[in-house]
Image (tube, rainbow over all chains, first blue to last red; front, side, top):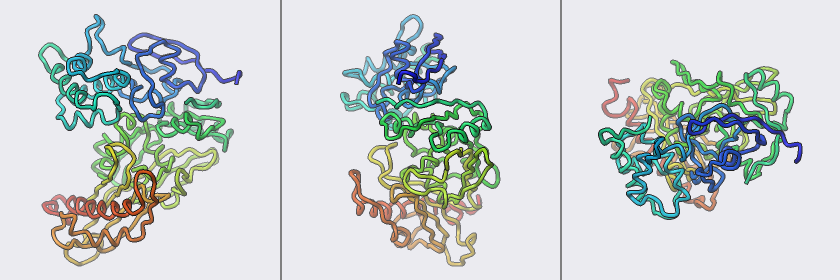
Length: 168
Length: 302
């Protein structure tokens, strides 16, 4: 449909401002990857089940494949690219996933990292059961989840270490 | 998997939204949280000509708890309702059920009123509205009307929201003094669709005007057991043994679930669903009884 309706969308992603014009049916996941070139956000199932595309909308985890880019016009997003500190130092959750082998192929990892980073902001000291529950909405076909749960607990530990507080 | 093309409307006020909905009529679909609608669009199970995005209607992003009950505006996300302390105090069943609605990430965006309008019989909040006898307020350019839960759910994915209408608010009545509530379900994984679920509300016999010892009046609402959320009433159920034990409610559960006629699917046979309904009902009655003034140690609180 060549006359497809377009919409101007302004987004602040990882602190940088973007202004794009996209078809109104553009999913946020596709806008991030195709229009903004931020391919860290991965697209798995495209119907809200796998969690790979999870990003933070004004700090809160949401599925970017279940949002229209037009719906979040003017809002702030954090993607996996925005987790590391400005100097490039990995976020505690990224460090923990590396240390604990919380990933193999890495396809699902961006969704886990954003979900867990937001979770730990509100729950700095989860039990193993709580850690398991925190990632229940994200699918991983490689790890069997054991190392991911260990990564969540390790990330909480790193965040609690003196002088290594989590990101605000 | 991308939605097919549609005309997009993003009204800034409720009046603007109603004007657009009146104009597009049956060709329009309201987008609120979109956690059920977007998959349907992406899989092209639906292709509305017009999408009316109500996410700018901040005036509808409210949760108001009062003595009579909890009013939830169309743009209140599940997470906001779940976290609202006033709502949890006035009607504990809300938080008990919301914890089981999909995953936290979905609840951050999905709206409670939207899930009612979606009318999925496996949606927890449909059973909550039904068991509590709540209602939904529908607005259109012509005015407003209130539809009680019994008339709101017409069939699977079919609610009373008509062309040109916007579900603006849901009302969940307050728990009666001394009442106890529980919501239990069985799902393959926490957050998945329930294979079967039950909401239980019990009121002590005194409140029900029934004199028998330990007896309660119970209302039960079921998810994933039929085309719409079914409600069963037990006017005078009494535990056979300690009220906190599910086994004591086996007879009551058998009575409540006798008329349920769930269907089988790839997740569960009809017989397994009937079994789950019976077992979950007994457990939910025990839990609700324990939380009520009929249960242990709660008489003072009542």
